[in-house]
Length: 162
Image (tube, rainbow, N blue to C red; front, side, top):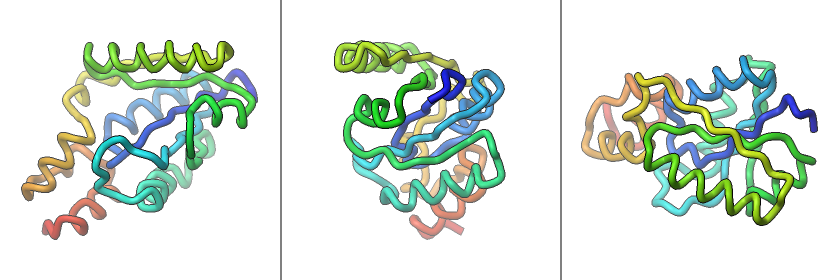
């Protein structure tokens, strides 16, 4: 794999405008971005793996710089299968950095070839998290300023929001 390719893994449940911001900016920096939608989630999922994968594919269907793939199992195993690249992690807050730093060190321990790059989200999206969006939507709130249009439709459908 080319060193100009960055792998952006995540659960994306749901995919937010903050995630979109990271991918768009990463395209400018790296040229190609692989959005790796993780099958396994440690949290209670709003959407199935297939739903999340489909939504992310739809978002980037016309963007030739972005490839969407399914991530099954350990990230370092996926990294090996793709024959390298660079891992990209989005950072919103200091607590995000602490968690992502630990994960980067764990990945580096499992495979010393893994390089992780951190990218700060634009300040306008620093409050956005999938957990916050799930909670707002669950209670019938308006999340249209937080997610792409196709994701909004699926969130509204999931919770019966008009």
